[in-house]
Length: 166
Image 1 (cartoon, rainbow, N blue to C red):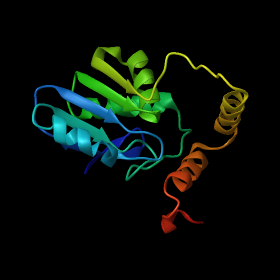
Image 2: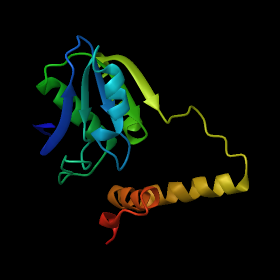
Image 3: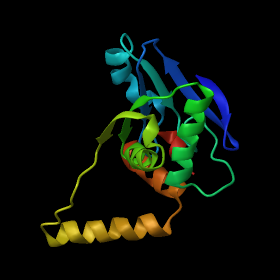
Image 4: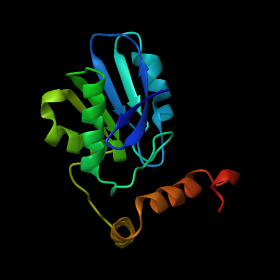
């Protein structure tokens, strides 16, 4: 991985391939650039792939300012400028999808295409249980710090990982 100083943090990223067109992949909450390994195998021959560890994820530092989607979108614009990239196909998953939406709103001139994974146009809560779980998620997302949410998600996703224990 390479790194650049971006908006007060050291931002790490993979820069793979030498194609004329660039794909910028943005991973989900609690993940890192490695989550795109299967896509790398498919696209590396024809595209240049830029795959960052988002702020506060993987090797990238969190910084001291408040973590926001706008700040993460700004991070990506600065990174692209530093790399001399003017146009990208942007693909975001989960948290990366939210950052991709923000990036599209703020920096549409960079976009060739936008692909958002794990997104929906509407949410249909058909049962009481689904409505309750949605409300619970909404409360948790507005009261807990992002780092704690990521920690608890990691515990759920990787219950046998001893490095996650406090």
